[in-house]
Amino acid sequence: MPLDRTQAPAIEPITHFDMPHAQCHRLHNGANLYTLNAGKQEVVGLEIFFNSGTVNQPANGVSFFMAKMLAEGTKAHTSKQITEQIAQYGAFMEVQTGAERTFLSVYTLPKFLPNLLPLIAEIVTQASFPEEELENLKNISLQQHRVNLEKTAYLAGVQFKKEIFGANHPLSVALSEEVIMAQNSEQLRNYYAQTVAVQPFEVMLSGHYPDSLLKAIDQTLGQITFGVPAQKLVAAPAETAHKQRFFLPKEGSVQASVRVGRAMVSRKHPDYLGLKLLNEIFGGYFGSRLMKNIREEKGYTYGIHSSVVPTFNSGYMVIGTDVNKNVADATIEEIYKEMEILRTELVPTDELDTVRNYMLGSFANSINTPFALAERFKTVHFDGLKYDYYNQYIDAIRNTTAEQLQRLAQQYYDPAHMTEVVVGGL
Image: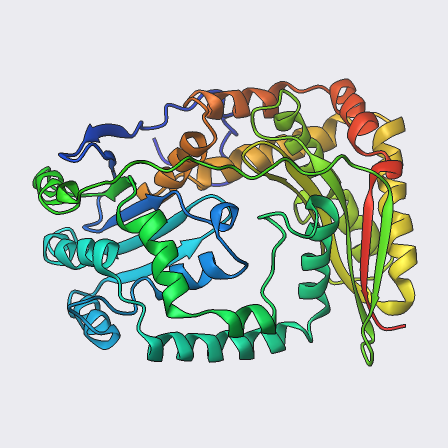
């Protein structure tokens, strides 16, 4: 039967999703190896998770610089030699750090990973933090920091987190010139020795690969000897939401960066999934109410966006935009006006259905690669959730009612609990 191209295909609602589960294997040294064998492309990603981050750093900046320096030299290889060996196998390596974890990631063809595993194990156990490479990194970081200080958006983001979490919270600490220049190799080596070199880690392997890779990983990363596990620390919850306003003048700037938000709940909270749906309607996508009002109708900005950002045991909501300094107050007023509408009026059925379909379609599109599936696994793994969390997500998007959304808006969209940060010209 020929395809009738005059008729649009029927929309099939997503009601359930059977996500491939990561399998857990125990390496020789007791480390957990999580595997997701999926996809058809001959490519793999290997990630190592360390319990190292700003939550347990001895001084500001140490976690960041330790992570950036981890692959910049070992006792046996210089930074240049490491770079050349990675390039030889067409691989990509990066090290990232956050509040509670540091991630070493390598992406390559499965046939080349066994050749890189000894180097990866060497980086984990024998990083040397050479002075010359550290000085180069400090100079680069210093220049980037000075550039950032000229950006109102950067300054607003930093200040907003300080207002929400407190100035010294692991999620709000930021680099400064003094912090950058204070870094030294000895301090980085000591921190590395305490949090990476001998501490238990976890490993994630994702992509399309032969089972022989598991043995290769066990023969390298599985042979690393661990010391006594250190106490695992987690970042404290955000401070209780309360009304506050912060203005930072930026001389010569005609633009103002606006951040409005408050402390929120974690993924484990029963309100979280409903808040995700509410946020999408409010300002989470291009067709949101904030975009229609402040971008399309008022013409104050090219873009405005709101997000619900979860942390391990709390979270926060933030609305962000850049506007002309003369309309910053009017923009905040319109933000609160849209909040009030959600608090006092039910979301129309057609708008709610549109957002439901958008969110479910976006979710389906976000899990179409093995690396994306690995990210989904990391979310539930690190937050202590079960895999059915994603079916709970689908259920919440499909079934949360307009009345429930209004109740959430009444509880969480109260302007009396919002923090306002404005950075820009006078």
